[in-house]
Length: 202
Image: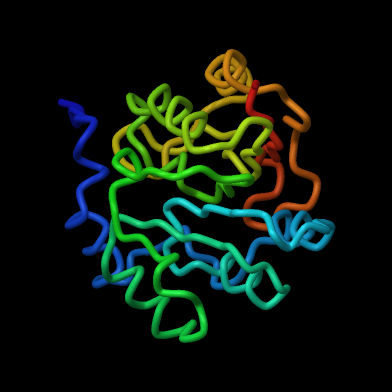
């Protein structure tokens, strides 16, 4: 008999804390991924209010801080992850580090970064994810990052999906500035990622 998923299970903090305790963090590549680094490098406005949900070890946030961005926020349900981030980034504003369930979080942002967070959620929560991203973005705000274009797993994260499925999810809330195969993925993910730059419909 297959595993029956419940929407809350993969959002449970103990589940994710155990991943960091046991070192089973296969999604963690140890640095900011190339597609996001190159996207960040072309941003001119250092004043953007940026959120990185499911930030984990927060390499994207560390890189943005080094690049001079002043208003970066990270969010993760795992206290172990956020404590690890604080240890490695003592200059990062503690008030911008949030240990909370994404769906309980509040705020308004110019830019939200997606990096292996969507795929960690039970697929039953994907419509809720889209709604929450819409709520968290300012009018005209952007959701930018990477989605797996791959089947992956059906009973545990990371969960995959397809471009057609994702377009159906986002089309009523976002316009698609970029929604295409990623050309500069890291080698293990080559041909398995989509780069998205989605703009909140005002």
